[in-house]
Every structure is written in C-alpha cells, then in structure tokens.
Image (cartoon, rainbow, N blue to C red):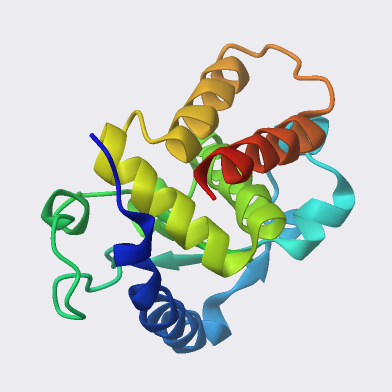
Length: 176
C-alpha cells in the first residue's frame, strides 16, 4: 500500500493540539515512572529516562478523535481497547493494569520514540505505519512489542535506549 504522506501532514497540528489538551487534563495524576516502584525497569532504562517519563492511571484510554478532525482510515485504531497509550513524555495506563510492569516497559519504549522523533515526526511515522501495516506490525509498535517480549522473558537488552533511537532515525529517514 502506498501512503501519501502529504495527505496526513495537515492533520498533525490538530492531533498534536488534542494530545496537549489530553495531557493537561490529567496533569495532576502524572507521576515520574521512577517513583512507581518497578525494580526491573531500571535494568533497561536510564535513571534520566525514568525520571523524565510520566505515567497517569485512567479508567479508559482515549485515542485522538481522528475521524472527528477529518482524518479517515483509522477507525480500527480509534476502536482499539488499549490498556495503554503514550503521548509525548506521558503514558496512560488503565487502572486495572497499574501493577503490570510489562505494559509500563512497552510504553517507555514509546516515550523514547516520541523523544527521538519529536511530535510531528512521531505522529506522521506512526500514522503512516498504521495505514501501511496495521496496528501490531506498525514499525513503532513492532519495535516496542519486540523489546517487550525480550523483557518479559528476562533477557538483557544492551543499550536499549540507543537501539530504539537508532531505529527511529532509520524509520524517519525512510518515511520522509
């Protein structure tokens, strides 16, 4: 499937604005990941990353209202019953998964991706990946799920943050 990236670009600012509003809505619930007590995360992520990243626990995950802002083709994403979602430096986890270290790991990988790509390129890369490959095989999801599988198996991942950043740079170079 060929993706016309130019058709997605006009929506980036609208999505980014919605995300900023969503983060503001939960401002008081956000806490540094370093403060939530998962001991295994420190073996994979730097203390700087764990202090930078924020988590908020919510009843239900809200994806951006893509159809409402005029972006078609993402109804499958809007209807996902996700347990977590990452927006910029903050990820949101449903309260029933608050004790699940694995989902926190997965979302931390997305924090690195957001940080490396910046909002506009993350949104564009993620959107193009969803359209071309679907949710699970979207390149940004595939890398997070792949490393999450290694984490779940207790495998060490040397230089995880630099590997994720390198993957993002390669993706961005291929999508531009």
